[in-house]
Amino acid sequence: MAIAGELDRADAARKAEPRKFKPVDMPDLEYTPGLAKEMAPLYEKVRNVIPSVEWPFFAPYIHAINKLKKERGAVLLAHNYQTPEIFHCVADFRGDSLQLAKEAGKVDADVIVQCGVHFMAETSKILNPQKTVLIPDSRAGCSLAESITAEDVRLLRQRYPGVPVVTYVNTSAEVKAESDICCTSSNALKVVESFGTDRVLCIPDEFLAKNIAKQTKVKVIAWKGRCEVHERFTPEELRQYRKDDPNIVIIAHPECPPEVVAEADFSGSTSGMISWVKENKPARVVMVTECSMSDNVAVENPDVEFVRPCNLCPHMKRISLKNILDCLVHMREEVTVDPVIGARARLAVERMINLGN
Image (cartoon, rainbow, N blue to C red):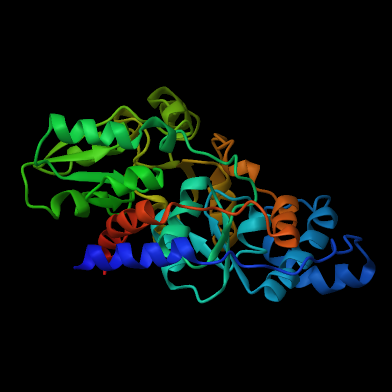
């Protein structure tokens, strides 16, 4: 009955008329003395991670975005890998994939602007089929999401009949629709063990699956997908950091290769790494993940020195203040999901969220 109800709602969403928005003019982006004074308190917050020479360029965009999103009834969701001028200056909700999925399911706004990659915007649309979801650049993809298709999942089910399918949230709506439940790096172990079975498919991130397998008696069957940011880290790189400074602390994301995780002092999800830094306050730390995250964590931990191994996500970096403003002005780059696929994918996402609750 629950699935039938979801499909009924999906059919209603399919027939819904698209919303129409009034056009607006592009705001004035001049950096005036008055604007400098108005924006000074905000710059004080981020001055340690945004050079003063860059602020006159960023400030007019930040001011215009914060004003226009109120006029549009919009909220901005920003992933931790966004640059500080986005993450700290225009975002209404910030976090990792799990936190953003939770926030997307609760927002009251008519418009959601997803400052992240495309699968995140799809997840917001899956959880809010009646809302307008925008992504500032629709080309912002993900190597993990592109590593597997819905047909691949169907073939895996044929090869492993009856084995539960746990799908990383870093996947397309079509892949989520073929899954039993979604997971993120912060709850993957809990999700894998929630079935009470001796085998589980954990796809598509090969390294996440292998790192989870070391923590459980469940046999975790992996796929060959990899994050193009995290797979580039090597154990030799981490050993060099320790050689340069024996007192340095190294924390790594579980999307890294297992041999990299083995060299770290702590391994955890994006939110787990942030919490670890806040609780332990290391004097000097390397966060082995996308390097913008170090900038964002540094804002709230000024006494911690961050050594930044700069592996940038080229997809996350497609999002900028300029195209955020542009999508709000023109209300374009809208993300759509087939309602039938969205209803099925929503079950997998909601199971993940409800398991956490």
